[in-house]
Amino acid sequence: MYAERPSRPAGAVVWTNTPSGPSGQDVLPDGCMDLLWSEGRLLVAGPDTRAYATASPPVTWSGIRFRPGVAPALLGVPAHELRDRRVDLADLWPAGRARRLGTLVEAAADPEAGLEAAALTLAAQADVYDPLLGGLVAALDAGRPVAATADELGIGARRLHRRSLAAFGYGPKTLARILRFRRALALARSGMPGADTAVRAGYADQAHLARDVKQLAGRTLSELLAGR
Image: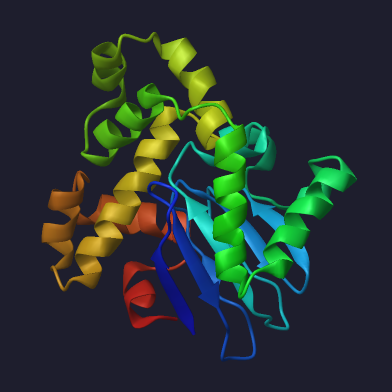
């Protein structure tokens, strides 16, 4: 069973997932990075460009999911180095520092509260979130074209691409594609017909939506809606 709630760090969500079946669930691309806790281990989930198959046999996971572009500043690791990966925090940080953060999580009443405390600790030590990145995410999530967004933000295409690689793990066009996929999935889950979903989410047509969903999720939209 999966459950989540808003977290105290701005835009973050804490969650827990206890699988009930014999195998794990695929994690779909969402533009975000997570700090994970399971069986006494702290890991970092990098930004995904395709569905990520979780390990089997199933175990309980807890996590805090940061809004796009935040985790690299908190962790001090460029997002593109973690793209499509799950990495032990101890492999990214000095062992003592990773151990201290793990002790903070373990000492909390539950892993979700511990991860929230860890995130707040990191936020107090990190640079302030770049408002340009927030403006980029907001514009792309609203369906604005990448080139027009770059002009509006006053940043050149090459510089925007470099900043995006470090913050999101991929260029702005890939980020826009993943955010469009998430919009389409939310609309489809609300019961909107496929053709209307495609138009509202920003696809050329329903066939374009179907191709993009299959490439990003590894399944059809109907299969996603059915929970398979």
